[in-house]
Image 1 (cartoon, helix red, strand yellow):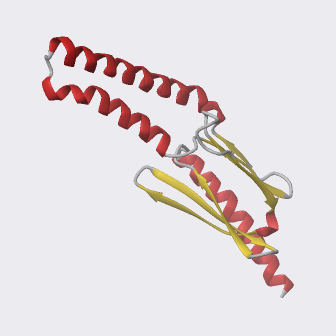
Image 2 (spheres, rainbow, N blue to C red):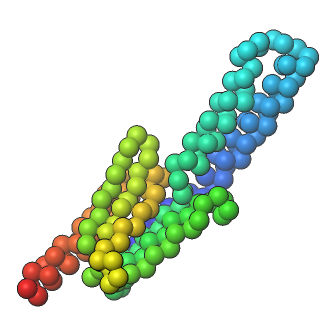
Image 3 (cartoon, one colour):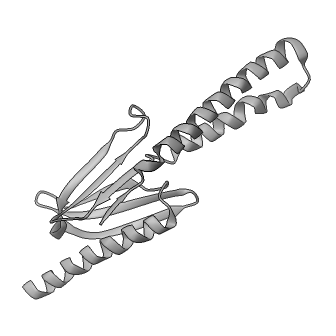
Length: 161
């Protein structure tokens, strides 16, 4: 199964540009209000704070682009930001038989995927991916696919014992 939200990059770029434009206009409006007009009084700070908070929220929710591929014998996870220099890109590929368990954690607007993989050196390794920008259907499809892999691995382990 393949899952990707790469098609939403233009939408994220639009919102980012819109928020940057609102912030720029807010700064200009704030400067004009403080220097010349003084119409808004202390409420002029809202012109800067509101767009800045929205812009921070857009970027604090994490990496926007998530790609998952379970076709073949390997699982492939990619997680990146639409602005390349903000966060480090994550890219992991490992055989399906190494997947031990997974967990999707959702707190308010932030969703994270924690994948536990078996490792030769340390026993297990936990990989973290930010999936806040996936729709509910995409998250359910991801859970369904990972459940299939985990169940298949558990059945193989039972047969081997």
